[in-house]
Length: 219
Image (cartoon, rainbow, N blue to C red; front, side):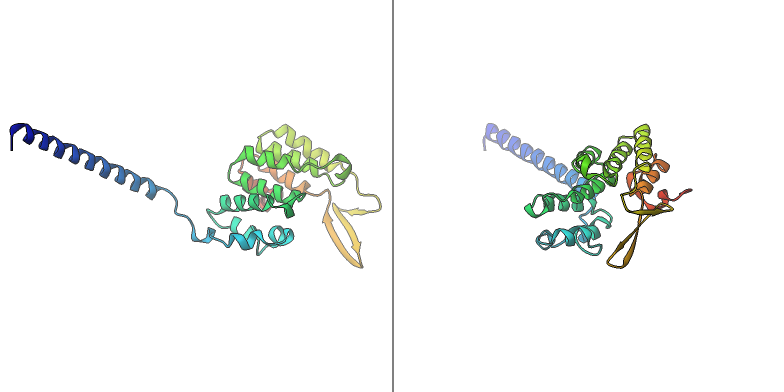
């Protein structure tokens, strides 16, 4: 082998070794990065098609089914929010504002404030249809997420002043309804305790401030 050929062969070997070492270093870095990521929780894997096929009431109101069990599992909140978004995209979900509201709440718990606020705003009702102060509840929730204590206080106070529905009876903050001989007792005004909890725990995350502990004086 000539000197020129020997040098060329040596250069190729050196280059090959450098490329190999770079590849090894990249693989090691990738392995470290992957190890640092949280593993996909097995509990987050669901029969997506079956859930999307549920009726709106089954998907949203069944405490043991639908999206709710997934949202309660650690590490599955984002998957739950995305599942609600996928369900809302279906024609059968049109006009069901609570689905958008619940997706907003899950995203608020995740710290996705802009997305949560946009979803909450989409649930505002026409004034003529808002007899229970829903829009004030939305105002107060958004104020909490945007850390506007004054706006939250204003929404809470306005909600506390809403009128009792005509012909209805409110006793000690409870609206008493009789339907087909069955008595129903509903806190009135609705969601006032939630806004008071958000005020009481203003400096805490949404998930905590929304919880029952914060709705209780001294919580």
